[in-house]
Every structure is written in C-alpha cells, then in structure tokens.
Amino acid sequence: MAGLIIGAAAASGIWLLFGNEEGSAATVSAPERIGEYYRFDKVPDPGSEGRHQKVADRYARYDRESSARLSAAHDGAGAVVAQYTTEDLDSMFSLEVVRTRSPFPPYVPYSDPEDLGVDKPIEEVLRYGDVACAVRNNPSQPPIVMACLRTAGDLTVTISRVSGDMGQQPEDVAKLVDDAWSDLR
Image (cartoon, rainbow, N blue to C red):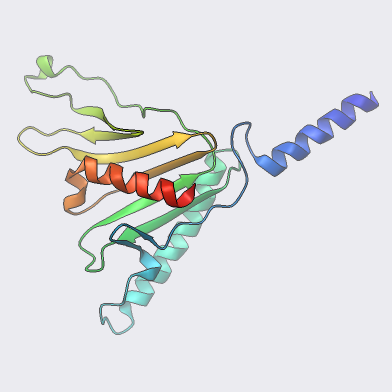
C-alpha cells in the first residue's frame, strides 16, 4: 500500500512539474518581433498622445488572460499568446504558443467542390513545408487564412486572426510561423 501511495505522489509531482504527458509546464515568451511585425507592446507609438499606450495595455491584459486559457486547455502546459502588428498598424495577427504537441494537420470540415459547383472546397488545409494552414476559400478571391501551425515534440506555434493583406497570403503566414518557431526553439 505504501508503494502505491508513493507512486501516486510521484506521478502527481511529475504532472505538476511537466503538465500533460507530452507537454511541458516550462514557461515560454513571445519574441519582440517576428519578421516585420512587432509584438503590440513593442510597436513604436505613432504619435497618438498616449492613446496607443492605453490600447497596448489592454492588449497586454487580453494576452495574459488568453495565455492562461491556452495553458488550461492543454493541461497546464506552458503557453503564451501575443498580438503582433506592423509599425503602421495595417496588418495584425495573434501568435499562440503552447509547450505541447497538437493535432496535425488541423481539422477542417469536408465539402465537395463538385457538389457546390466551385473549384475548391469551402475550407482546406494547405501545406508549406512543416507548416499547415487552414484556409477558407471564396470563389474569385484569394484564400483567407484561418490559422497556420507547426507542431513537433513539446511545441506548437500557431498564427491566427490575421488581418490586413497578410490574411490572404497563407504562404507568407506560414513563413512567419517558421520564423517564430526558429526563435522559440
């Protein structure tokens, strides 16, 4: 009986230390820049007379709460969420990093283009090397990026909620995922 208690205590301690079975509870920090994109709290103030700082503070609060939620969704694995933008604030995205492996490629619902009379399914996964992007297709428009992710071992890097022209360039979003991956490895 004592062995069972000691074994359960050891297993509990390991779970508390490392989170889920493949993940790690180790902290992770978002890089200050990814390519030409600044983490929102690091973008230069465009001369907004303090309004930018209020928005940056709000995003920082949202990112802290989102990071805690992402961690909780992955059994306590280390996680960080951060908003990024160009210096002129024309394009933005959300970086989500969690210290665990995620399903790959991402799930998208099935649709048959032939049934719908279109060239491509409504949603599909496009692969760019080690990155998979879930995109939404609209007839006569470029695909719209829903999310791009890369995962292996105890790390998943996702870019989602892409706005501006970047949201219609999945190969460019995939490159940003690879850039962030390199910074975080």
